[in-house]
Image 1: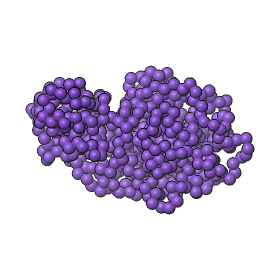
Image 2: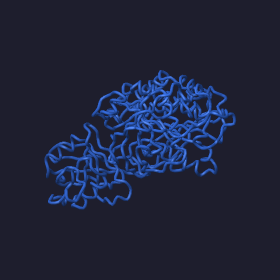
Image 3: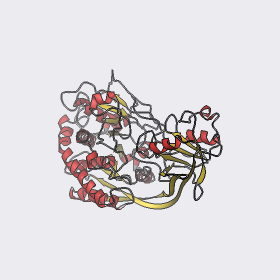
Image 4: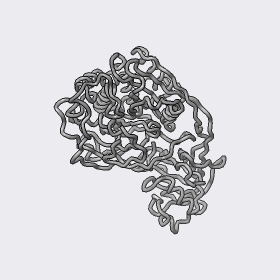
Amino acid sequence: MQQRHKLTVLVSALALAGAAVATPAAAADTLGGPGHGGGHGYPPSAAQKFSKKVTERAVFRHLQELQRIADRNDGNRAALTSGYEASARYVEKTLRKAGYTTTRDPFTFDLEVEDAATLTVAGGPTYTVDQMTFAVNTPVGGITAPTASPLDTFGCTAEQWAGVPATGTIAVISRGGCNFSVKAQLAQAAGAVGVVVYNNLPDTLLIGTLGENSGVTIPAAGATLEDGQALAATPGVTVTLDTRVHTETRESFNVIAQTKAGRQDNVVFLGAHLDGVEDGPGINDNGTGSATLLETAVQLGRDKKIPNAVRFAWWGAEELGLIGSTAYVEDLAAQRGELDKIATYLNFDMVGSPNYVIGVYDADQSTYPAPVPVPPGSPETEEVFTDYFDSIGQPWVDTPFSGRSDYQAFILNGIPASGLFTGADDVKTEEEVALFGGTAGITMDPNYHSPGDDISNVNREALRIMTGAIAYATYSLALDTSAVNGVESPTKPRPGHGHGPGKGRSGVGTYGHQEGWDRAS
């Protein structure tokens, strides 16, 4: 999933709720229960048979190749690196063997290049920090001042700064309780000349954003839990905060391919970001989504009779702020009628987390009100996934329909969307352990955005479950999108089939487990 700190052209930060646990309805005896056939009107066996062709073993072989690519390219596959280029070549080569014509879709963007990111204790250690997105630079050489902290560590109200001698200090504050921008605003109002917010998870540098037009005019940075606690334990110690970036124009690309079969004016669109972060191989995030998409494309390319074309995208520079997908959709929007050709968009970002949940984007807002537009047809797209899981007796959870991955540009342009997710830095609950196994009290991916996100970081059972769901949903919609957008397939069987009424989640229990927008990523 994306991190937001290395770029100037950013989408606005979104206030988020958490995911929730949902228990499935009674499982149907076969895939495609009453009112929800495989392909919403086609025999249930059609999408079911296709889902068995897209195997977890084949997907894992693609992941092994992505790991080899990272190993040969400084340990990562990040945008603008040789590892990303090699990843794209592997995807393109595999697709061409499967009969596709591939296209590189270029885009340019402004990248913030880091010049300094340190906090040095006078006569003591130097800590690595990260300048928050939209924060101002320090002067060259940094700012030097004593430290101060609010009364309750979070600094989320003016009362928590009352009586604290903060004027002329660098505020040291714990993550939690409110947005980063609120913490910085209150510290600034108390007289601080800089802000350092430290993480609430161990061994993880806080990557944050103030958001546009926050009103914060003092430098702001993130630190690790350990470094922040060391600073907070010695109030008044003199430190130098040096955080500076400059902007350069860069170019990257998406990889696009589309089936030759199927009508070209009612396209089912699937996407996953191909880039990872600089700190590791990016195998769960997001090799898993990319590899599953790739094997789905390989198997679908052999089908010459699907009614609707399927387009696949491997997005570039997602980790730098959803840049590739945003540029692509903006280009389509500038071409008359191109967006109208897209029936729905399916997004796959992290589908093999080691301490996983089986998450579906909550497009129908049955658990979480969405902080972004939810285009008509999105709940019906979600329903393809949830019907599949219900029909095989697989528990699943709602995760917020938040726009925090590559589907954002699609929904902002009125295109229906949903997707799957197995968890990132969210802490797993006891209720979720009861449904999926794993360990409560730790994150769903303890190696999220770290060097440990390698081939050993993938839970193959999660990958198997999600691979089946992705393949099933792809083929189901390739056969028929009428429940989503009202477009009837020319060979759709009638009558007595088709999409029945809604999900009917009576008795579904929910348990919140994610943070709000005080999250990195």
